[in-house]
Each structure stands twice: as structure tokens, then as C-alpha cells.
Image 1 (tube, rainbow, N blue to C red):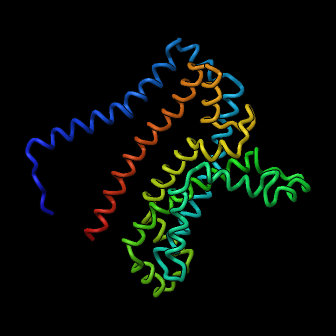
Image 2: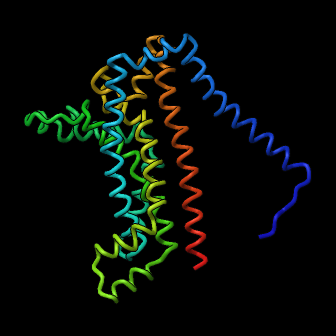
Image 3: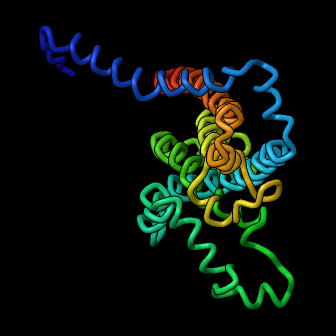
Length: 277
């Protein structure tokens, strides 16, 4: 590939990029941690001793623990079907998988309200059977699963398509069964991409606001996740508490970034080795 040299322009573009990153990412991140500890470590830790904060943390972990494995299983199955087989409706399936990327999270949450809310299609039936979906953990999980649906699948599909199905075909001719092929050939070949997709899915699940705010009801101590609890503290003018809890999410984001970088390096290394074979 021919590289175009633009004398004098490259340093200018680099400075521009660094300035934008510093203004939009580094500076706000620094403000979060600065305000969080502005009244001392005791005030910072007190924000996490609040029962509502502990409830929000626990609920966020619960939702992530349910939605991320569900999307990992779905993403793996969808990627395997799309990359390894030909069938009618393949393009439509890929479009549906990508739909949450192009749809507002608020709409994703509103869909579940229209289905399972008190005035929704199944609202009366659910109320008659004492089943609560909206304003409960169930509704929050459904909304989170919807907005995080594409992450794992979109990481795996290009890789599986690039790898082809020669190894699986060879295993079939040797008499291997479907589960054996998946466990010993397909899964090891995509393990780093799978972990990468799970990592991104988890980061989005723990930080989701729009869809969750619609279905949760924002009940303190019950249905408030971390992002919703931060909003509630900020609206109450508890800025130190809000930024203290926000620093937890920011810290998780930094950890995610580090792990993402490590996985990208590991994944690219293994992919380059595989291509040289």
C-alpha cells in the first residue's frame, strides 16, 4: 500500500487529535476523580456506605451477570450460524443483530414497556398472574440484553468468516461430531475475540442508562442501577456523592480499556501466527 506523505500536515493533525482527546476525554475524566475526592477520603468512602448506593452496585452486578452470559451464548451461536452456513434470511438476521446499534436505547426500553407495561399488550395478563416485568430486575435485564445484543456477535462474525470452515469440514470427514468440532476447533479459534466481545458487552451493560431508565421506574434502593443512582445524587445536589460513585464506573472503564488493549494485542498476535501457517 502506497503511503502519501503530507509534509507539515501530519504534526498538525496529531496535535489536533491530542487536543480533542484531552478536551473531551482526559479532562472530564480528571474532573470526575477530582470532585470525588474534593472533600477528603472519608466523604468519598461515605458515598459507597449509603444503602442506596450498595443496592445500586449489587443490582448493576446482577444485571451484568445475567445479560452478559446470555449475549455471549447468543453471539457465539449467531456467529457460528452466519459464518459457517448458508441459509435464507441470512442478510436479514445480520441486519436485526445490528439494529440495536442504530436504534436509540430509550426506544429499546420503551418497546418492553409497550409489551409488558400496565397498558401494554401483555400487561393485563401479567397483572392477573402476579408477574412483574416492568419496574423490576427482569425488565432491566431485558432492556440491557437488547442494547448489548450485537457486541459479541459482531466481534465473532468477521473472524469466523475469515477463518472459513476447512478445519470443521476436515473434522467431519474424520468422524467428529458437531459438539466435538465446536469444542475442539471452533471455540479455541475464537476464544480471544469472544473474550473481547464479552468485555465490551459487560462495559456497556454496567454503564447503560437510556433503556434502563425507561423500564426501571428509578425506585431508590430497588431498581436504580449505578448510572441511575448517579443521576439521582446529582439531582439532589450531592455532587461529591454523585462523582464518587461515578468514579467507580470510570475506574471500571479504565480497567476495561486496559483489558481491551491486552486482548487486542493477544488476539492480533494469534491471528498473525494463524495466517502464517
